[in-house]
Amino acid sequence: MDKDTGYYWCAVEINGGADVKTYFHLSVTGGLYTNHQKETGFEGDTLTINCYYSNPGEMSWCRLGGSCVTTGSSSSIDGTGVTINASVPNVFTVTMSGLKTESSGWYQCVKGDLQMPVHVTVTEPSTTKRTPTTDQVEQDRVSGDLKKIFIPLSILIFAVMVTLFIWFMLKRHEKTKSASSAMTEAEVIYSHVEHKRTTSNLRSNAERDADVTYSSVVTTRQKSVQRVEANDENVAYSTVAYH
Figure 1 (cartoon, helix red, strand yellow):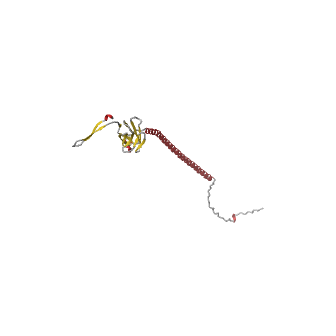
Figure 2: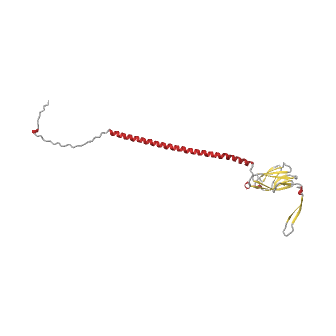
Figure 3: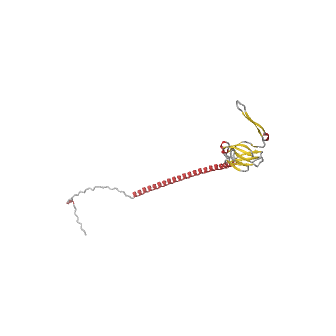
């Protein structure tokens, strides 16, 4: 500023000898400055620098030892987007978008013949807590809504699967029980039929036995007949006439 016009001096202290110093006159006729000569941004974010001036001349933003972007244009410096807006009097705004860690370094606000150096430091998001952007907030909200829907839905699906599994096991048990009952009933019927068949066979055998007549045969030995010759005196003769 104009009030800073005057004489200044700088010196170097030398041990065991006289200090070395020199004087100079600083004349301020116009000015170029920024609020901060050190700016910090996060990788992927946007950084805004305001350059204030009171002198005439073309406005531009340059990387020290590199390329420049002039007023009213949109370009990039080393892959980082740069836009300069001079719609407000006595100030032009530099916007750096899509910051990279490689974007760190020295830059300059340039107005006419004056330059104001600004150091930019770009850090990774993991090193410092970042302020959520609107898109991130919206994504978090959508993610939260999906979780609210997904968790109850998952529980419902699990409950349905468990119910179906229990129903399947009960059906299987009923089928097994029915098959076992059918086999038992068949065995009972078969046993009953076998019993009837055995009873019938016994009855038939009994009936056949009833038709059989049993007799006892006794064998006796014939006694020998002793022939006795008759004496004539004991014989009576008779005459039989045949007609």
